[in-house]
Structures are given as structure tokens and as C-alpha cells.
Amino acid sequence: MCDLEKCIELLLTRRSIRRFKDEEVSLDIVKKILDITRYAPSAKNRQPWEFIIVSDHSIKDKLSRIHLGARPLARAPLGLVVVCDNEIAPESYQVDCANAAMYIMLAAHALGLGTVWIQTLRNTREIQEILGLPPNKIPIAILAIGWPAENPAPKPRKTLKDLVHINKYGNKLL
Ligand SMILES: Cc1cc2nc3c(=O)[nH]c(=O)nc-3n(C[C@H](O)[C@H](O)[C@H](O)COP(=O)(O)O)c2cc1C
Image (cartoon, rainbow, N blue to C red; front, top):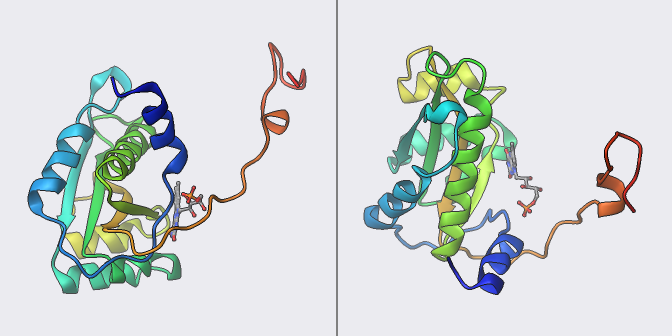
């Protein structure tokens, strides 16, 4: 286990990074991140995920144009696509693979890299076509990944008072 304060700091200091240095991210570091990601939890341990490392500029460029919010991909040296099999885990594939995406973001942050999650769920077909995915392989997230060239302030968060109930919905804890 990491030092308690360091572990908590890791969780509290992750930010979505949308601007990246013009510096390479080595395949070794990506493999390290994905090796850690294999330990994400999944229902019945089905591990319905696979990953596509997108380094090819023209493919990354196509992905960066699927919607306006995908633009950070054009500025990132790499994209990492989390692909999930909806036949292996029909009821849980989306949440299983969201866990994997979160592991990627946290492992990358621990290694000093920045990421931002690029929404995919409204563009499934288009992404499947760009990446040559069969119909049962659903792209759940694309992570733009690179060395951070910005240090954004934390985004506002709802308070515990807004969020926490005890025993039954409506019984606010605070
Ligand atoms: C499911 C999901 C989809 C997201 N899609 C996008 C996106 O398409 N483009 C983008 O720039 N950020 C996207 N984000 C990043 C969120 O905007 C960001 O996590 C949120 O504003 C909180 O900021 P933080 O990550 O810095 O804490 C997405 C995040 C999630 C979890």
C-alpha cells in the first residue's frame, strides 16, 4: 500500500487534462498502465475489456472529430480506447469497463501522465467503423493521454450534505 496520505492525495489531485506537452509517451509506460488496469473489478470477474492504443495520427484525428468534446485527442500523443464485450458481460459491460477506464486514469496520474475521458456512447457505430470493431465490441471510453501541459483548478463538487442519506432515501445524514 502507498503511504496513506499519498494514496488520498492521488485520488484528490487527479484532474481532466486537455492540453498536453509535445512529448512522446513510451509504449513501456502504456503497458505498465494497462498491466495495472487488469486488476480493476468486474462482475463475476468476467473482465470483458480490451484496449486499443491509438498512436496513428490519422486514426486519432478521426476519433478527435466524432464530437466537439473529443478535440483533446487531437492534441494528445495517444488515445486509449476501452472496448467492452457485451456478449461476455451483457448486464455489466458498461460498469465493468467504466471501472477499467477509471483505473487507467488513476494509474496514469500516479505515473505523472494526464488523461481526459472522451465520451463514446453516442458515437458507437462511428467509432466501431474507425477502429474496425465487430458489433459486440463496444467502445466505452476513449482516454486522451499525454504529459500534462496545464494544471487546472479542481472542478466544483457537490457537498456531502447534498449527497448522503442514511438508511432510507431522504434521511439526510448531515
Ligand atoms: C463518462 C464521461 C464522459 C466524459 N466526456 C468528456 C468529453 O467528451 N470531453 C471532455 O473534454 N471531457 C469529458 N469528460 C470529463 C469531465 O468533463 C470531467 O471529468 C468533469 O468535468 C470533472 O472534472 P475533473 O475530471 O477534472 O475532476 C467526461 C467524463 C466522464 C466520466
